[in-house]
Image (cartoon, one colour):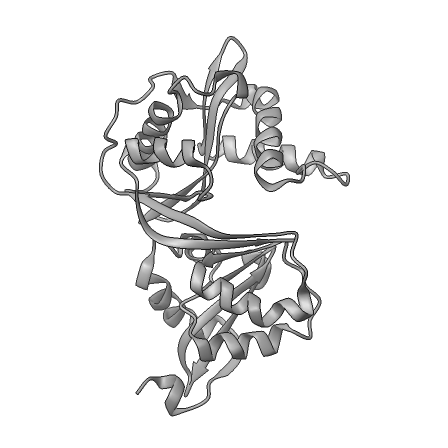
Length: 284
C-alpha cells in the first residue's frame, strides 16, 4: 500500500529547515531534476534567490513531492495524490508561469487538473525525448566550435533571438525587454556557457549550457544557421559542446528535443545521446 493510500498529505511552502529533504528528493534523478537542483544548489530554499517558490507535499513532516513555481512550473517526483493537492493549491491563483515543463506523466496529469482554471495553453508539446550522455561523443568534434567571447556579443544575440523565436513562437525581445535579454546573453558568455562556431563574423552553429550542477548540465538553444543546414554540421558541433561541457561543467550532459524535429534527433543519436525520459512542455 502506498503512502497516498495511508494518509492525506499537506501542501506547504518549503523553508530552510526542509533543505536536507529537498536535496534528497532531487538526488533521486539529478539529470532530470537539473533545473531545480541547480537553483537549490545556489540559492537554497530562499524564494528571492531561487526566482520562484518551492512547495512541498508532506506527510508527518516527510517530503514526498515538490513543485517549483516561478517563470517555469516544474514538478518533482509527484504522484497522483500530490498532483491533486498541488492543483488545489494552484488553481485559485493567477497563473504566473510562461511554461510548464517536466516528466510527461506528471505534467500532463497536473495540466489536466489546472487547464479549466489556467487554460487555454498556447501550445502543448506532449512528446519531447529527454536525452543524456555521460561518455565521450561518438563522432569527432568540430574544432571550430568554441567558447564565445564577450566581444562577440553583438554577433551572438541575433542568432539567439532567431533560435528562440523559431523554437517558442514568440520573440524574446518583444515588450521592451531587449536590453534585459541582451544582458542575459552577456551573462551566459561571461559564465563560459555560450558555445558557437563563428566564421568570418557569422554565427554558423551555437548552443548554450543552461542549468548545471557538479553532476549534470542541460544544453539549450542548439541552432544551425538556416543557410548551413543539411551540411552535417550539427553532430560535430554537438560533439564539441559535449566535450566542453564534460571537461568544464559536469560529466552528464542532457537536453530535450521536440519529437517532430527528426533532423536534430538524428544528429543527437549520432553523437551518442540516448533517451532516459520523456518530457512535456505547456507553453502560454
